[in-house]
Image (cartoon, rainbow, N blue to C red):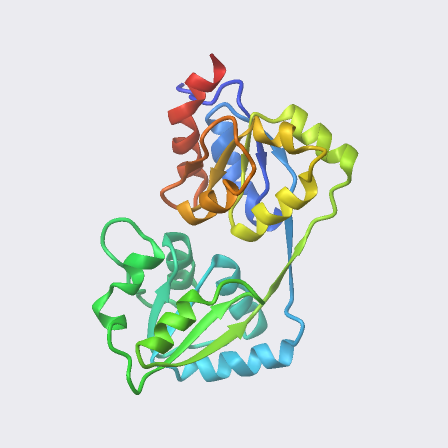
Length: 256
């Protein structure tokens, strides 16, 4: 049996309720997985406003889910959520989750599944007179909603959950950094929290790890003064198997 990550110790920072499938893929490839989430996912501050937003989204012409967390939260807050417009997911994992939850097809770009390629779809090109609903978490980037509005859409952002940075004490953080060879982050918010936790005291220990990131944007964020010893790697989709593939490309060299 091929175990391309034999000996690799991976700190998996994905929220606990989403980590097991990824951990199983890594362990099947021979990695030792250190499970320690950087973020917790919580209900939104205003649950009634979120439910009202979902009711409005049901009548929207375009419904875009920015994450699997947004999809999960939508049906958790409104189990009978039944959007009627064209559905889109930002990234393959979000699209898959939205298709499974809604029971309807989701519009997808061909080739690499990035936000830019999604926004290049013809059905999102001219939106004058259209209502677009963006299902997301509290805060975060507004680029997607801003682009839709610039193309003429009336945009409703529906905040369905919030992220909170996990409380990882200095001693626990030091042990994780000492034991890991690679760290997997799945969002810019998670990386920002990791860099805050590390601060100056743990910067050097963090810098020696191989960072696995979900996008080039997050890698650019990671490069802001951190000084990684090894170049971060980007997964081609949000899945445990993609993390295995990305790490396997570099792990043999890292061991030498």
